[in-house]
Structure formats: structure tokens, C-alpha cells
Image (cartoon, rainbow, N blue to C red):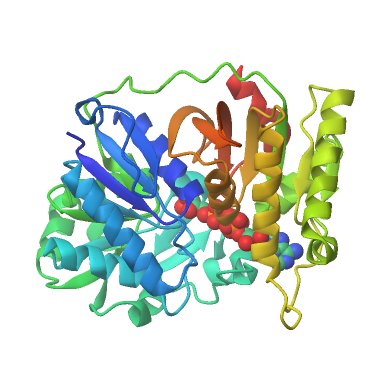
Length: 418
Ligand SMILES: Nc1ncnc2c1ncn2[C@@H]1O[C@H](COP(=O)(O)OP(=O)(O)O)[C@@H](O)[C@H]1O
Ligand SMILES: O=C(O)[C@@H](O)C(=O)COP(=O)(O)O
């Protein structure tokens, strides 16, 4: 029976956590929504449920998370890991606090640690303040995220309006005193969500050791660094990696913009045109699909890049009266491009952005992702079975979190497949 059941609030987050769990010795399945894993449960040590709940209305996020929780419990998962973004992406009305509260209530538990820290990707927490590299969260590019602008760096202040429980802090002084000190401090907190400082991998291991008996863990993927599964050699082989490739970049995050701008000098590229999509969605998508197919014909080795924004491009400031919001329109467009490109041959897709990845994978009708080779911290290749136009086709996908990956990831990620 799986030991760990995880509920991830977006698809990039799900594969981020899954690749960490695999590296820590857990044979891990990623399932979409409440789909059952394809593997027999006795061959799994962890199941990660990928939801598209990060920016959903709070009631929907809680409902979907509880459905995932019940499915995981039915599958035999003993501990629950609530995975949210390492930059704590959420709004004042949710969804991190309400989902964690609902999971704790359902399990009859009263407390959970809150650990977004992931030093390998530059996220650290000091006195409850979240840093992205050297910048406090609210001074980082996450300040201007189109869906979840983060305007405060203090996790206690961010979480307080989202939860019914008191929010407390365990600082570095206690963490550096070791797992017993953290465990003692936690024992005295009563019912609470407890933000724990962590700036290094060693801190994450201390917190994981201190919470080894906790039924609920919450955090980014970093906290899983402190978990140890029973199968150290559980990494799966990558797929054959054959077939036409495409990059679909819907993220507006700073790292993705830089990656887009960098890749434009090497890859054939097209920018999504919001006005054209609003004027005639089908025609605008057909144009993008035709572009990609023509580029494959001209040079099968170069993946075309279809993207939303590069460095210096503006986000749409306000949605025109009665129109579909740009974010939703762009997600739908990239999802449709994905299904219309898989049908005629695309077998390798690199998708940038959590919401975008959710839209793409759902449009491709997949029910599970099988984690393969890692491209960068938090970004693995995954194998999935797509179901488009009544046909099943194997596809390799990499779901890249907006802010993850090196500058050249759109041109070099393919090497990890061969
Ligand atoms: N030019 C733009 N104007 C408005 N929204 C945009 C623009 N470009 C991208 N977006 C939207 O921003 C959101 C980015 O979210 P997501 O895909 O989760 O990326 P990230 O992982 O960087 O958060 C998506 O909904 C996307 O459609
Ligand atoms: O924890 C993280 O940073 C990622 O796993 C993640 O959730 C990123 O979200 P997006 O940037 O929206 O892809």
C-alpha cells in the first residue's frame, strides 16, 4: 500500500513533488483528479493527485481536494502531503488555508507544518518571510503574477486570513537546535498551522524528522527531501523520445519570459495573439497549428515555440467588457494547440506554466503521468497516454513550473530524453 498520498494544487507542482519523491526512494504515480493509478497499489509507495485548484473558486478547490483525499485514503495512503507552490501562490481568500483546514478536519488532525521552502530552486524562509533568491517574495517578479500577485512576503500574514486556525512560527533558532527541539515546540502549539523557517536542505531534513509521525504535511516539494522511501532505485527509464516536438509556453513568470526570449534566437516561434483569438478562436488556433506543422516539415529537429509573453511584452491589463479573460483564453488556445498537434504526430511536449499545464494535460485526456528523467530541479520528463479523437497515443511531456529551469531549457530539455 502507498505510504504517502499527495494532493497537488497544480500539474507542474504534482510532477515537481513526484520527481522529488522518486529521488527519495518512493515508487510514485501521478494521477489526474480522482483517477485510479494504473499500477497495482502494492507496487507503489506514493500517489500524487494533480488538481487544477490553485486559482479555482475556494469551494471548488476544497471539494476537489477532499475528493482527492478520500480517493487516496481508499487507496490506503497513510500520510497526506498537501503540495502548494514554493512561492505560496494564493489569494487572501484561499486556497491554501481552506484546503489545509479541510484536510485536517477530515482526518481529525489539529495541526500541520507549513513549509514552502525549496533551497534548490532558491526559495527559503527566514523568520516567516519567504525569499525567492535574494528577494523577499513581494519584491520578486511574483509581485506581478497575472493570477496570484504576491504582495506580502510574510507567510503568517498571508495565511492568517485564509485559515480558521491560529498561525504560528517556529524560527531558525529552534530548527537549528534539531528535530527534538522542533518536535517539542510543535507539541506545545495546539491546534495551529505552523510556519517553519528553512533555508537549507539540512533544515528541511530536520523538519521532516520532527514531523515523522504527523498525519499531514504541507509545503512545496522541498520538504519531501527529508522523506525516505523503501525503493532507492525507483527512477523510471525515460521514454524513447521519438517524434515531433513542440514548446507551449503560457507562463508569464520572469524565468519563462527569459527562457522564451533566449529560445527565440534558436527555435521557430509564434506569439499568441490575444486579439486574434478573441476575434476568431478557431481560425487563430488553426493558424498556430499550421505554423507548427510547417516547421516540422521544414526541420524535424527543431521544436517550434508557441508562447504567451517574452521579456518586455505586456500582460493584458484589463479584460474588455464581456470578453473572456486573457489568461483563460490563452490556456484554452494552448490546450487546443496541444490536442491538434498530438493528433498529427507531436510526441514530445514541453509546457511552461502550472495553469497552462493543467489545461494542456486535461485536453489531452490523460489520466496518469509516469515520472522519468529529470531536466532541472522540479522538472521531470513524464510519459503519458493521450486520448485525442478516440485514439490513444503515448506522449512525453515536461510540465515546467513558470519559474523553474535554466535559461536554455527550451532548447536543451530534449537531451534528457535520448
Ligand atoms: N499576456 C498575458 N496577459 C494576461 N494573462 C496572461 C498573459 N500571458 C499569459 N497569461 C496567463 O497567465 C497565467 C500564467 O499562469 P501559469 O500557466 O500557471 O504560469 P506560472 O507557472 O508562471 O504561474 C495563465 O493563465 C496564462 O494564460
Ligand atoms: O512549488 C513550486 O514552485 C512548483 O511546484 C509550483 O507549484 C509552481 O507553480 P507554477 O509556477 O504556477 O507552475
